[in-house]
Image (tube, rainbow, N blue to C red; front, side, top):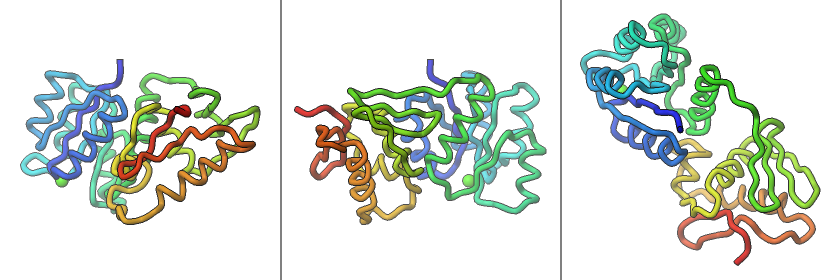
Length: 225
Ligand code: CA
C-alpha cells in the first residue's frame, strides 16, 4: 500500500502542484487549505507523512505542528517562504522533522519525503528494469547492452521518472514539475537536451530507441513498435 500524505497549504497553485505531482508518483494524497481542516483530516485519515506550510490563515503551521505532535509521531515536513535560522529553529522546536524553503524543486521534495518515510520504515536500494534497460537506485547508474553508464543528477532524475512510468506518455508539464523547479520557463529546450543525453547513453552500439518523442505532447519510455 502506498504512503498517505496530508498536504496543508493555503496557496492553491502550490497545493495543486503538490497534489498533482505526488498523486502521479503513486502516493495517496489528502489536501487541506487551512490548519483546522488539516487537523480534522489527520484525525479521520491518519497520514504517513504531513507536508505543512508555516504561513497559513488563522492557526499557523507552527501551532498545527504542535497540535499534531500531541497525538502523533507522524513525520512532518515544513514548507515555508521564510528562511532565517530563527524560523528554522522554531519549526524544528514545534516538532517538525525537516524543513524545505520555497521555491523548491519537486525532486528535492520527493527526496526529502522518501528519506522521512524510509526513516519510519527502512527500504533497500532497488534496481528498476524496463526491457534490457536497468537503473540502480543505490549506485545511481544505468545499464544496457552489457554496459554500465554513469548519469548526472538531472539525467538520473529524468531516467528514474521514465522508469517509474513505463509506457506512459509524460507531458512536458509533468517532466518540468518533476525534474526542474515548478517556476522553470516552459519555453526552454532543456527537456530535449536531456532526452538527447539519455539517448546517447542508452543507445550505444545501435541499440533500439527506448525514449520516444510524442510530438506536441512529451515523451514515453517504450519498446519499438
Ligand atoms: Ca501559505
